[in-house]
Length: 189
Ligand code: SAH
Ligand code: MG
Image (cartoon, rainbow, N blue to C red; front, side):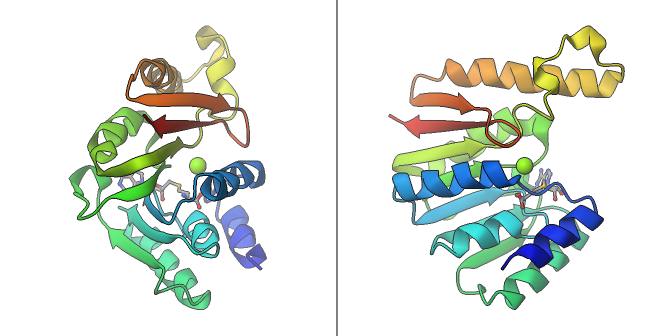
């Protein structure tokens, strides 16, 4: 199960969640009794399919038409059309119509704070927010001057600023893990 998706992602350089990060995501879902998830960043539907296979109802947002089409195909193949609602939209223009137990943020890495602010009003009591790729391939722990590309340097700076900002949010109790590519989990207080 699921090897076809991992294989496709590898061949087409689609940045799906790493195995270790997925373990963290799925065990958090069990631990916090998550029944519904809003996912920001579908790509080919891999993480949505893995969550829905545990019984979670997932609304997932994707702005790229090709990725969205691929996700639709994969969701059909896995017979999860009744568990996953894919939406083709820029997440910054999407307003949820209900509340969720989990918000999983895994889209444009410079926009984490915007996604967090936009979607946390739609979190149920005792809900959680998980953000992926906070180590950004280990680059967030490097000396910024060692990162040669200017765009990359500014992205890494933004991710680090987001982490600091997240720690200061008093309505959430946030912890970080190095699992996968680095993730945060914020529990709504
Ligand atoms: N969650 C997926 C991987 C997502 S990769 C998995 O682990 O299987 C990130 C995806 O977010 C890309 O497909 C990209 O097109 C999408 N994305 C980036 N910014 C977005 C935005 N503002 N709105 C919607 N999708 C976005
Ligand atoms: Mg990711």
